Length: 295
Ligand code: MN
Ligand code: MN
Image: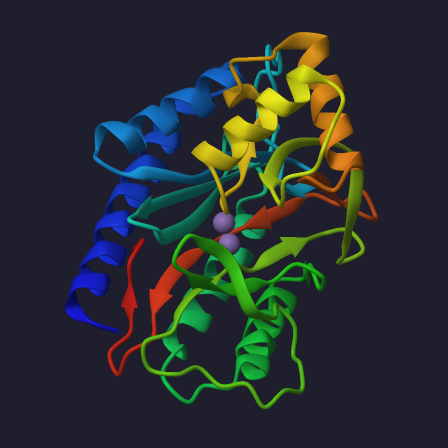
């Protein structure tokens, strides 16, 4: 990886870190989820970053892929466990980082489980490290706290303008030949739960991504698809970012475009046992001395 690329990764990481710090201040009981998402995303832009994906705000047994929908009225409650997952890019070089917020020390041991698993994984994320063994360290750490890792959520390799590329970086011990290479950009993201240790797709989606052009009869759908392709191309977008169409017509257009194979939808991901889920995530450039860009 050349110096210029490393610089861009690091700049994205710095901005993402700032956005995480802001989220820790503004996410309070009674704050609206929509307002929090907007403030975090504004912070990214004001600091000179681009948004790599909608700020994921996933509460309690929702592990990931939720964000405020248009006119979302949800507010944070005293006992909520809130995962904030932030994506920033500079010229397509992505910082992907997440933290879990709770109030009044609620479930602090569970927050610590995912944080410590991340810390332990980062310590061994050097060239030559077997990714299945990284998963093993994550699993052992979370288990030592008395929780389960979420086995079917994983970290990933990052590419320019691509959030998930190549193979996954598991959160459980896995047998594989894949090892980290010098110059890899990766996201490591352990999830801990007191539930069953796995997620399934929920019934709603708030995040989408352009796949391909497909004919649709609805004019509003054609307009939406053109906007998605032009503005977001390979990166995910939130339904609430769409200015035209809105309301019922937006829902209809999104539904038709998913049906037609033009848009990919990301359903919210729910813990199958209804357990609470915590998450911690950093982006790393794998070098002899690895750089954690978001720390
Ligand atoms: Mn993330
Ligand atoms: Mn990630």
